[in-house]
Structures are given as C-alpha cells and as structure tokens.
Image (cartoon, rainbow, N blue to C red; front, side, top):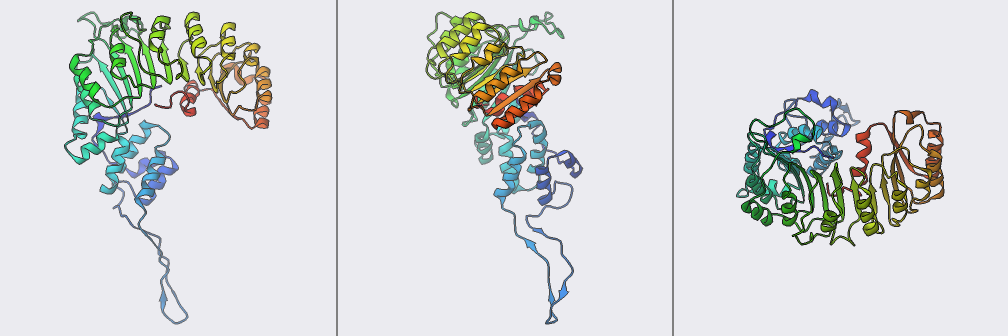
Length: 450
C-alpha cells in the first residue's frame, strides 16, 4: 500500500476559491467559517457575532446587544486543521493545506510543517525544489527539514531527468527526524532494446547501477531509519544488501519486486526486526530468510506475505517464529499443513486472509486469543464455522469481511450479523478489495511505522 504523499515538485502554492469548499468535509468547512479562504474576503483574527438592533433600557439609555468573540486560539485552529487531515487522504488534503498556508503568516509556518511530514522525490527538479526549501542555513529551512518524517524516492534510470543516487542521499541527510523511507528502483534498458507498453517480466529485466561509495557514506551519516520499504524493479541484486548494511537499526522491513538471491559470503543481517512484509511474486529462498532473520528469532511479531510462501519457507517461518507472532497476513492459508501451523501460534492476535473457501477445520483450530480477523466470504463459505468460533471465544473484538460477488446472497449473513451484535463484536463488510486490504493499516498492527 502506497500512501499518497506531498510531491515537493508542486511547492508553488495557489489560492483555493471559496466555491471549492463544497466538496470538503464538515471539519474543513468549519475552518472556512472562522477564517475564509483567500479570495473570499479579508482575513481577521477576531470574529464578531451578528449585531442585533439595540433596544431602550428602562433608564432610557441604549443597551447594546453586540457580542464580540475574542481571538480564536491558534492551538485550536491548528487542531482543527490537523483533524481535517487525519483521514490520511493526502490527495484531498494537500489543496486544503496549501490554501491554509496563504491565509496569514501565523498559519503558514505550522501548516507547512504538516505538508512536509511526507514528501516524494521523483526527479532532479523535485530534488532541487526540496533542497532549497529545507536549506539548513536558514531557520525556515531547518524547521521544514526537521518536519520530514516519511520520504518516498523513485530512482528510475529509464527516465531522462531521473533522481540521482547522490541527490537522494543528500535529501535524506537534510531530514534528521526521518524514520520511514520508501524506495522504488527501476533499471535502464540498452538503447533500442526497451520494451514499452508490455506488462510482463521483460520490463523488469533491466539493469540498475549499485549505490556508489559516496552515496553510501552520505546515507550512513544521515538519520537512523526505523522503517524501510524497498521495491526493486530491476535485475540489480546488490542494492538490497547495500541498503540493509546502511541501516542495521531497522525494526520494520518491507521488500518486493525482484526476488533477491542469497549471498553466501555475507555475515547475517544484524537488525532485530519486529515486522516483516514480503511482497514478491516468488517466495525468497529459505537461505535468504535465514540470513535476513538470523537475529530476529525473539523480536519478530508481524509477518505479511503478498503471496503464499512455498511449503519449505512457510515451515521455516512458522516453526521458527510461530510461537511469538502476533499478526499474520497471507492470502490463502488453505493447505492442511498451514492450518496446523497457524493453530500453533499461541500469541496470535491479528489474522488476515483473502481465500473465501477455507475448510471448517481451519476455524476450529484457530488460536483462542485472536482479537482481529479479516476474511473473505462467497456463496460456498462455511459461515456456520465462523459463527461457532464467534460464540465460543471472548477475545474477538473486530471482524472485517470482504464479500465476493456471490457472497452478498449468502443465506447466513444475517445470523453472522446477529452473532457479532450479541457478542459485542464490531463487524465491517465491504465489496471494495482495496478498502478491505487497508484494514491492515487501520488496525495499526502490521504497518504501524507507515
């Protein structure tokens, strides 16, 4: 899940007309009530209530009925703005924040700090705009650089103005409070040999240069990254090992794209990972995972896989980490071996799966301490087994259900709702797969760093 982010290439702020507020949330309209958007009317830090006609007092003097509202505290204004942006929809919130920057100088600095919480660098031009904004020789630049917490970087060597490795490293060093880094690496085909518009693996068979010594030295001198997402869409097999060597303090790691090959001449990865997300089409080898998780045997708590691991890899993961895992996300979990392995995860609190036709024995063998379950339902799903589990367990708090086309007409949907209501379980049903998968972030168990 890639969250939308503020692209620093669009740093030129533009005024938002008042009419555009019609599509905003009630909280955003509340902001415009106290402080109109630029272009509507002059902004004032003092708001006056409507004046009613005065009336005569018994002594004959005119008694005013005008009530003046004192200056609204800046802390309250900023709290409203932050609440308006709390839904995480950056595409919708960025125009609001840009408009708020133009209201007055009092708002501008704080709202810009919110804007710079997440930034995206895709090209050299966006890097140049960003590096000017976070110039640490100025108070404003230091403030904006300190505000950056998350950064997304696209290193696409197939583009004419792609972001240079050295520029990427310089941008990271300007953000001392950066803790989450999302890197997408694309290779460059030889002239005349690139396959454009063909969505197959041939687009991934492009080489990308490794990070040079200067880039690695700059990244090591920068902030300690806690969370790393790395998608390698090239044939470069060294970049993943270079990045992991730079940040041994990682707690959350998400890797995908080209499956890495094991390296036999490297010492084990020193980090004690707490959360691991594998987003590969093909499962990495057991040798690679042993190298990666060598020091995480007592720390790993969350495991996410976009594809079901092969039997050997799943057996290694469950036998080594199953007793301590608190969150598991896999699309299928259909094999009998997998059901037996899941039943041995005694500390499991969060389970996410997308296969609707799971056997009854799967639900019967689920750990008793589960608090959050996400699953799919079609017309053939054994909902009676789910209802039996709900009625037998006291720990379950939320149940998120994805309805396939035939699942909307399942005859046991109503008894499922009744069972959840009776047990006080929050039930959410949706036919939007993206929204269903976003449940992983809402619970905050697997991707809490992102």
